[in-house]
Image (cartoon, rainbow, N blue to C red; front, top):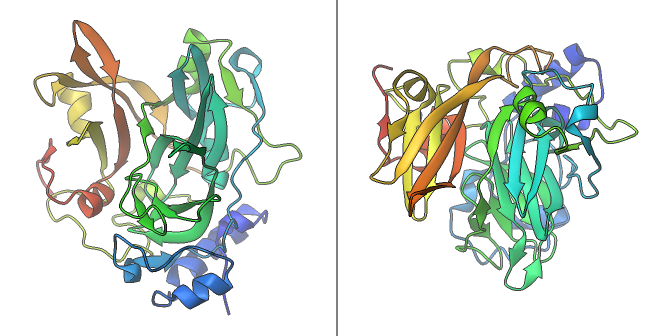
Length: 342
C-alpha cells in the first residue's frame, strides 16, 4: 500500500499528523527510472549529476503538492488573516515589493510568479525550512516549476515543465535531465515577520490564500518539528556531530563563495563580518512556522539580513535560514561560525 503525505489531505489536524508519521516510516524503493516514467515523468534519466539512489519518495506523486501558477494578491494593509509574527518571504526588485506567507507555501511549496519584469519562482521546503527565490529565465526560455514528490537530503526536488529536468531546491542545481549540472539563478529575498512588511510597505502585494481554499491555511502540518532532535527518517544522510542537527543555520551565498553561521551566533554577536565585504546582521523576530499548530503561534526565531558592500553601498545577498543537518548535507566542508557544542 502506498501512503501519501499530509500535503494531499484536508483532513482534521490529528488525522493529518498521523498520516505524516505513516508516510515517514514507510519504506522507500531504490531509484527506478522506469517507475518514474510510469509515474508520468519524461525526464532524460541518462543525464545526472548525482547518484539516483540518493533520491527517495516523500509520499505524494508528481504535482501531488500543487504549485500555485496563477497567484492572486492583496495589499498588505488589507490583510486580516495573518498574525503580526507570521513569517513571509519578502521579495523586493524592479521597484516592486511582494510578500509570500509561509502559511500558504507550507502547503504548496512553489509559486510561479512575476515581479516587475522578472519571472520568478518562490519556493519553500518545510522539511529543510529553506526559502529560496529563483529567476525562471533560462537559456532564453521561461520555466515553470512543479513538485516531483521526491526528496534528496530531505530537500524538495523540483522539476521544470518545459524539459522535465529535476532541480535541487536548496542549491538550484539541475540534478537529473537535460540541464543536469547547471544552475538556476537565485534572487535575494528575506523571511521576515508580516508586521515588518505591513509597517514598512503597507501597499506591498501579499500572496492571497487560494479561493476556494485548497488546504487548511493557517495550520501547520508539521507540529513539533522544531523540537525534534533529528529530522524525520526520510533523511538518510549523515548528521553533524558538533551541533544539534535541528539548530538553525544561516547560509549566505556571495557568487561562488558560501558562508555559514548559527542563528544564535548572529543574535548574540552580530553584525558579523563573514568576509572583508560580506556582513550578516540580526533584523528582528518572527514566529517559527514549524512549531505550533497555529502558524502564527510558534516560538520566536530570528530574521537576518545579508549584504555585500560595493562602492560604499550595500547589496543584498542570497541567504537562507535552514537546519544544521541541511547545511552539513549539501556543504559538508563549510565551517559554521558559532558552533560551541553538540
